[in-house]
Amino acid sequence: MGALDDLRVLDLTQVLAGPYCTMLLADMGADVVKVERPGGDLIRSNPPFVDDPESEAYGGYFQSVNRGKRSLELDFGDETDRAAFLDLVEHADIVVENYSAGTMEQFDLGYETLTERNSELIYSSIRGFGDPRTGETHRQGQPSFDLVAQALGGVMEITGPEDGPPTKVGPGIGDLFTAVLNAVGILGAVHYRDRTGEGQYVDTGMYDAMVSLCERTVYQYSYTGDAPTRQGNSHPTLFPYNAFETADGHVVVAAFGNAHWQTLCEAMDRPDLAAEYPDPESRLRHRESLRDTIADWTASRPTDGVLDALDGIPVAPVQTTADVFEDAHVRDREMLVPVEQPGADREVTIAGSPIKMTETPPEPGGRAPLLDEHRREILGESSGPAGDISGRSPEAGDD
Image 1 (cartoon, rainbow, N blue to C red):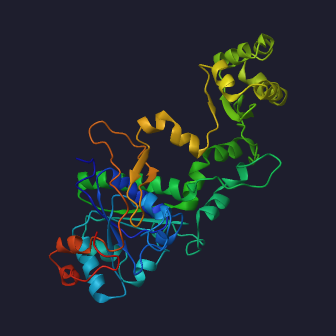
Image 2: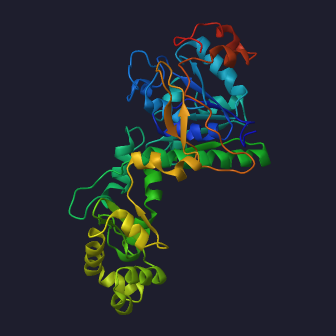
Image 3: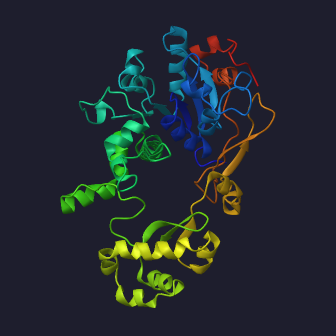
């Protein structure tokens, strides 16, 4: 039993933000029907592939965020397919889409139309700049991707070396953080509906999400009048809180508390520093010289030697993905999940669910679907117009 196994989600999303949001819901047990436009999600053909892109059904990008879903291919420009979708809406709990504002309305499938068919429906959208229903702005309608959201929201301005250019954060946080917030909003709307019987519109904009993610810069600018900028791996108000090079790699050290600072000084055989800089304020004032002292000490030791010497302090090696794969903690927490790769001769690995629950543990539900793989079973569950097209052969075939 999954925590959300009584919910049916119609997932009209593609690429990353929307699919990641609905994947979280699927991991927690929701029945997620991925309604794909003709030809399928744009990202199905994106690499990497195990061996042969021609024989494999999709690449790693699609596999990673579409596990545990069922696929149905529909053309909203076709009246029969549109009627099939509307029939599915009548029995759905949630619709999620990440098209540009106004796209669903072009097919007369916007929020207002769908709620006429199902008054308890929760309709959720993920857009670059939000939806006019929750706050109209001049940016709505402009195209947006992760890179655009990170640039506008202030993430890039505070990321990178002090003397370097604005830098994008590695993971697509403009998509992923927005997706997580959207999932939270959906679950809040579900709870509200359980109490009132009323559905509602849930809207999460990528630009908005990045401003929220950069909450620290907002209050810093408000309090000081100075716009925060890049300062490498350090922290504006905590020290030491940084990355340091070792003889064979890098470590991060977060010893800003007085007790941790004293332990660090003892490990470096520098009790004088603990006495001279006993509080956070004095350490922040002299952070440059203190950083150099710590850096000289770590540089003369291998990573394991630094970790052993600083046992009990928040410290860790900077790991590669290969290191993550070898970390027993990651395996024990089931954060690496093997799944079938259709068309390949071996399984592949995708990231597991970080949400852990004692009574209803989320379970990644196997590989991503083939395009239109579940047509017969999905439309066979419907008693309306959808049944008229349930026999149409899926392009990708049944598995």
